Image (cartoon, rainbow, N blue to C red; front, side, top):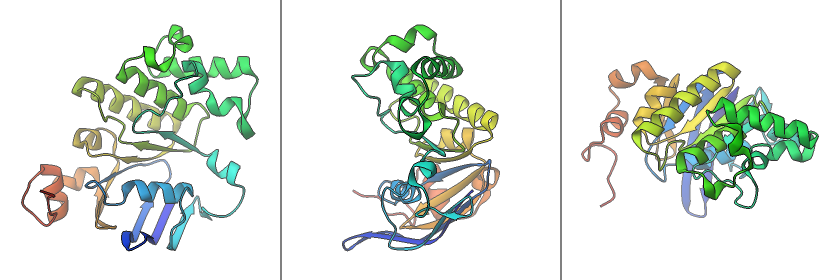
Length: 248
């Protein structure tokens, strides 16, 4: 579903992606791990076309991600943002139904609200939450609202950017389980960026280790612990010593 071949991206003299190649099969869940500043978010933005790569090719479902109808292209994606990114001035249901109230996916307001409430129930929130504002919700509830919004338009591809950041271990487990259930249920292709190894083990079919702008290792999650790759082993075990230099 997603194919990146030798993608490069620099900002001035700072080379972030140095020839990144990654293939994500349709209907699978790929988790990208790596330290801060290794290019994970830049890769995601390149796929979405929010920034343009300097060279290399990005294909989505066999077509160049930079060509064709932009609105139709973006309509295929859902996104759970790291900080929730909910609109403070909108009630919860309008946050969830944001894409369904405007643009090419626009639905009548009553229909959009009904879909929003259904998606809220899917992530374990009661219908009474629909008319609350984000500030009235806990961090875990806000993350669930963000997840409901990500799936509201039934996307084919869903991106999860640090889905458990700021959550306690129990709520992190709940969100991980929800993500896994929903991705399988929808048959969606998922790409997740995370530092949380419990998330990796809970939601990944395949794992890719990004370091210094290239994929150092990729393979099934079940082979991660026996990979023999020094970069991957240092990262998953949180060791200070190894080929990845710790910033002191």
